[in-house]
Image 1 (cartoon, one colour):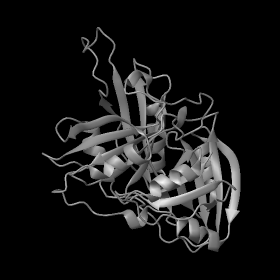
Image 2 (cartoon, one colour; image 1 turned 120 degrees about the vertical axis):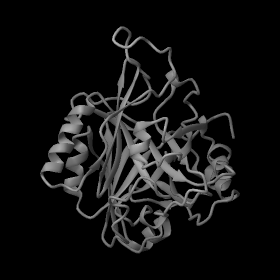
Image 3 (cartoon, helix red, strand yellow; image 1 turned 180 degrees about the horizontal axis):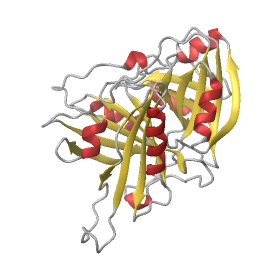
Image 4 (tube, helix red, strand yellow; image 1 turned 135 degrees about the vertical axis):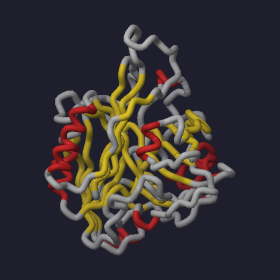
Length: 338
């Protein structure tokens, strides 16, 4: 890849909806606000996203963040209801992770929502030690780790985490004025099965992302949070590979948010496929975008790779040059010109 990186971290998590107001109000509690809006008619939507429907979109900004934004895609004729409350342990799954300074406050709202009869699935905020630091003495030295919880609702799939006794300055910027005291989306996730790991190469070699963590193993026995979030059974495990903005660092204290988490389950585990429920035109979290300089350069690189269903470069609903493709792991992506 060239030495002048022109791709950034995950730019947007896109959510298919039919009614914008409730979703705008929901994300406002996390510090988001209305940014650009735009629309496209069915023929152009078909060219860019492969969906036979008119589309109106609203980009939600978060403070001055240049990544981790939300795009609400209002479909006139959605294809299906999306993943809804499906398990996190399906191929094609997409979710957004956010940093908070008060995970218990979010849990309070979640439990109130449950009592009010809202359709919600969640896990209790489990204690996790993410980064290996010198183990201190309990009750005497600071406890260094995170509390992490999952929150599934019909249109949103979220993981929320709170840090204790450590900082990563460039990894998530909290909006302290927001109701739920949260950052922009710090990382987005995907579930794949590929024992050969060949599909991972695309993100590094073709897109030029920084592989910041590789083959980090998580098992039923090692992680209470992962056991609950991904419904691991005794003896089951997965490996995590992460890809970052090229300006980021493999030193975790200097990492930038905008990370993509790829969770790889061994092929011997039988996973359901949810790809048909998590692509443009579906309701819920159904697309991720990257923003690039020199979109033609990326178009040519991607066209000469092993992707499928690459579209032409056309103007998207915000008037930005854009194209879509299906990566070797089966996930549909969209690139947006800066």
